[in-house]
Image 1 (cartoon, rainbow, N blue to C red):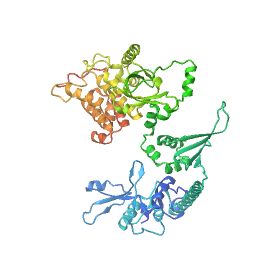
Image 2: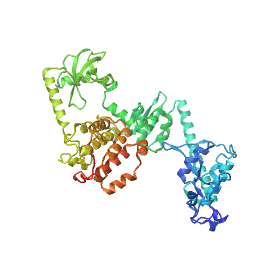
Image 3: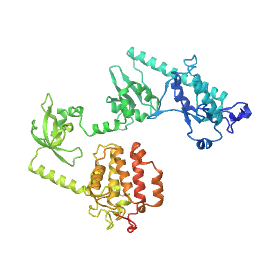
Amino acid sequence: NIASVRCKETCYYCGLSDVALGAPLCRVPNEDEWLEEFTHASHDRTTYMVAEVSESSSKQANSINADYSVHRDNKTDTPKRFFAVRVRVHGKLISSAADTIDSPSKNFNSSMQHFLPRNSRGFQAELNFRHESKMLFNCGSLTAHEVCAVSAHRSRKSKYLLERRRWHEANIGRELAISCGKSTPLGTDLYGRTYWVFSSEPKSLFVCGTNTSTLERKGKVWYRFHEPEEIASIMVCLGKEPPCDILKEIFTEAYEVVQDKSWRSLLMLRSHSSSPHQRKSITPAKQSATKDSGEEDLGPPFVEDENVLVESTNGRMLWDAVVIKVHKDRNSEIVNGYFVHYRNWSSRFDQWVHPERVVEPSKNNLIVQTEVLEEFSLNQQVKPRSLEGLNAFKFLSAKNRANSTVPAFPPEIFDCTHVRPSASYDEKLLGILKGSLLLIEAALPFGSLIPSELGSWNSQSVAIWRYMVKHSLGPETLMKCVLVLEDAISPDWLLPQVSYMLSAVARPWRAICEASLPAIALRISLLDDGLCYGTVKGRRGYRS
């Protein structure tokens, strides 16, 4: 009937209502939704599924909005509602082969022109009809007349096919030029740099730019990138610029590193370790030049299996090590590097180091090593600055703490917040969250937790809880520790508004299943802001 197609909105393209044009309004996709759907529809695949939801009781059936038409099953007489559903995995739209009466079709994108009514009743009726008839359909977030939507679809299709045709023509010309021995650039970025791949080194990316230095002569400067993490960093910097799409197709290994977000850690590992190319770049001429310039001689070279001290990359520590291999120049027999093994460390930390970083374990050097280690241990007693913003930080030295036997600043908090220098952002955030949770537990006021030998929060369970927090390897384990602490704190020590907000977040079972570092940070922040650290109240109302 007419009520199933009437709509109060206006068309997105022409601005007219359904009455003005005499045509019903439909649900049509915008440009981004259309482009995402067209890539699947062009391969005769569908991204939509129909979800059939049944109401279990008559009360629920009566609560259905009047705008929806209720379909009843003849056998069970239960009302039903239909929904158009799409599935995404890690942000990517999932599709399946179209198994409908109009597939395969001569018009491969016929489903792109079959729209559903904007009216709720008409939407339910049309979706039910297409589901039973096994016909394709299309949907979207915009409202427009069907004729306007079809016109927009045709114009978008023509523009898309023209761009793809030009792209294929450029690729064919580039491949033919490479086969004839002539190279053409892959593309140009916004700064005028051109990107090249030569047949002699197909796994390397060459970038040609302009030298803008005032000290050197201006001209063309070439850069070569060979490792996947290097090329991945270039892809990330380019973003959506034209050369990036071509680089993704040529350097598939680098694109995989971009997707799993491991290129940062790989670059950090390279920056903290010496590569063989760096070791071999020290020529005898340079070494003789250093001797002539008056620098200190390194002395006789070390031999294999000799105990040495290796200076750290930042120059602050001296580590005990053993020389495993010695690399010498073939012409001058000058040592270019030592391959060392650090004592009491795993063999995966073995590395090549420059000769300037290797010293003998003399008496003076051992004294310097001891002094540096003592200074480092004293610096560990400093409270981490990343936790100074917490309210619990101000009450660590309070007299009314529940854990009065624990030091004012437990050392495990420092151990959690300080991670290795090459740690990723997630590892650093996980360490800060561990320290924040231990800090809150250490600053809890007397009475907020009632320790008892038979209760759920006794001395043994507290020790196990702290061990679990300190050795949490991911968000799921740390989220469990947060929930245990929330359950052990009395509601009387929480502000009413914070208690309300904690009740509004995800339930424990769902919080564990969907655990993430931001979710843990939200719960810890609410817990720290809502706890009454400086108040001791309600002792008479508690029972052991």
